[in-house]
Length: 150
Image: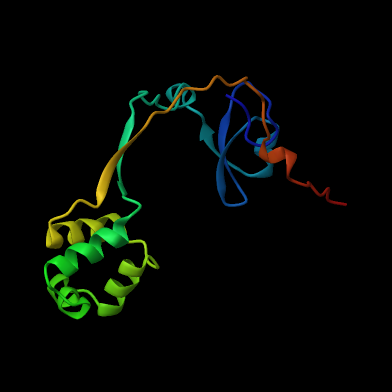
């Protein structure tokens, strides 16, 4: 494990520095209040690896406005009547049908149910694991300016 302030490795301590709880080395611990040593099992914690499963999500079809307007007209409903039926404002129905408002998934499901049409399609996104070169990176010590007392 490395020090959050200077980046050195070795035995670490938990310390409160300027209101933040950090893992620091012995040298950097003087800048805050030492809370105790870092326990061995805390040091060994690693982030959980995510399974490389495809992510499936619902997306609204691109021609949602035309589908909604066409079906509403087929049912013989005005925008005002349809808005009352789905308990939304007439202006919202008008904006959706004109394509000026993109409904969220919840509203799209509500419209689907009221009109008996399909507005959502499944989209599958696959994530690839990328190899990373291990780098030291930045620590808080790279950004902190320490003033010496005179």
